[in-house]
Amino acid sequence: MLSPACSVWLRSQVSKVEDLQVKIEGGDRQILGGYIPRVSISAHHAVYQGLHLSEIQLVGENIRINLGQVIKGKPLRLLEPIPVVGKLLLQEADLKESLQAPLLSTALTELLGTLLQSGGIKNPDEALKDQQISWQQVSIDSERLTLGGVLADADNPTPVVIRSGLTLASSHELRLAPLEIEMASESPVRNLDSFQIDLGSEVDIEELTLKPGQLICRGRLRVIP
Image 1 (spheres, rainbow, N blue to C red):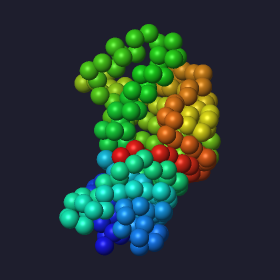
Image 2 (cartoon, rainbow, N blue to C red):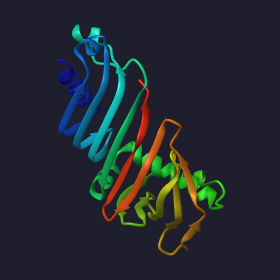
Image 3 (cartoon, rainbow, N blue to C red):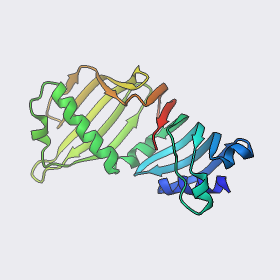
Image 4 (tube, one colour):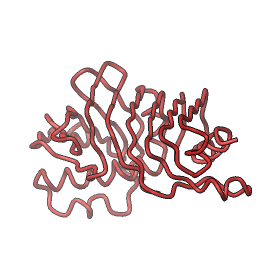
């Protein structure tokens, strides 16, 4: 009963998923009391809020749920934060598809403004104000991530390219370096100092690897209900 309920809840969180597997470990008495010692989840080609994920593997431990309400037909809910260990594989094609998601495209546009400001451009928000960036291209190799788009302007569309290495500055911080931005082919390439992105204290990344056409991430995070 519980495994199908978990599967239904997980499927409700994504718009698409293939080969979803859920394994629950624990004694009957523990589970009937709403406590699950361990849950393993794996899925392929999942889409969450427009973000495409080739492969995801998660293991959560010490999970407390509202089993009494589930038995009465209510949706499954987490009652406490849970520690999760996971592996995430992103293919280049996944990232390209994800560029259409407002969650990612907005984050990239905000990142561009922040990078321009750190590069000495005053009021970059004014330059980007009331304009949309259509992010269209992405490529991954063993040393660099490249993102390309177009700054929408009816009179003069402006190509935008961000090229950067991607490594860990700490277990919860990403370092972009070396980093360069190109806006329009006639503009000089701006080589910027390294830039760090803080993912928050709930994140603990152990591995971040760029391979040709792939990004692999392993680590831990704390899921808040």
